[in-house]
Amino acid sequence: MAETVEELTVTYEDGGIETVKELDKKVLTKGAWATVMYRYQDWNRAKEEYGPDKYTIRRYQKQNGEYKQKSKFNISSKDQAKAIIEALEDWIKLD
Image 1 (tube, rainbow, N blue to C red):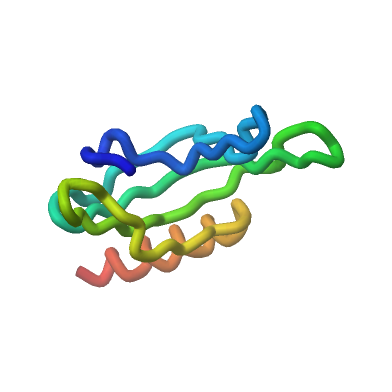
Image 2: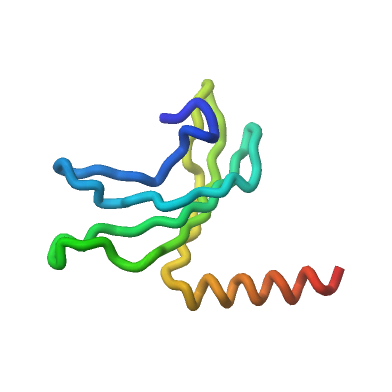
């Protein structure tokens, strides 16, 4: 497990194949609780290619010097991401 926020990743390898490829990451908060947003792609074994971009927001808690994932929210498509962005922009305008 990761000791620093910078070491956190969603990259995953199985049988020598990177089945989850991290494309980008944005650290939203640091500290005892960290929030990180990732852009990634899943490997499609049948097509032998990576699928469309996906997004996930993960919350980690630091315990005994290591970050452990506590929750996650997956954004499964660009359309869903756009809808979230629009909702947040509407709410921010109210401030």
